[in-house]
Image (tube, rainbow, N blue to C red):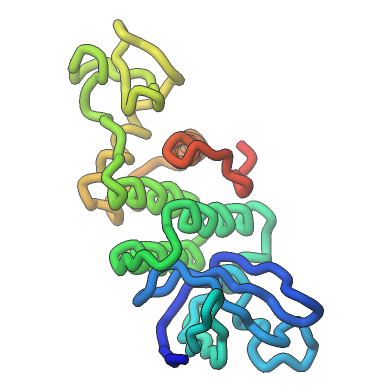
Length: 235
């Protein structure tokens, strides 16, 4: 069986037998991988703590018929703030769940790996909730499913855009209004992200639209995946 090395973001894990775990991770070189970490639930495990959700690791595995097996783990980056506050933890979990929903086993996607790793580290450094919204919006862009936000999906009007109709793929104007209210500040923030101006969005978006932006980007993920997110932040 072949041995290979990669770097990975740990998404989640679950128990296997009495002492093992199955680790679900998104790797740079192979996309999403599920692998067995033998003995990690024992107190003397040499790398169990390095495989918690959100950990970024350099990892060595050998290929198996159904599941690969982890043989070596080196911590690359640890999310230091994720358990310090319930709301922070919920946002980390939301990012990891979104990554899980948007990826398939064995499908390599270096651009998505780069986006996820940079977003997780950025949020860990400053705890800015706007990072989470920007991350979700960029994920949608990578998937080629960003909503239409510069003109009405019904009449193409570029003025008086006041509502978001997710089922139709974008915003509606005052005359065609369907869906939920959306503020101009949220549309401006999304536009900046879609144009690749993430840093500008983080620096210029007012705090008073943070929850509205989070709610809308969360709904975008649910609309696309047709599943409710378990890790939603309570608004």
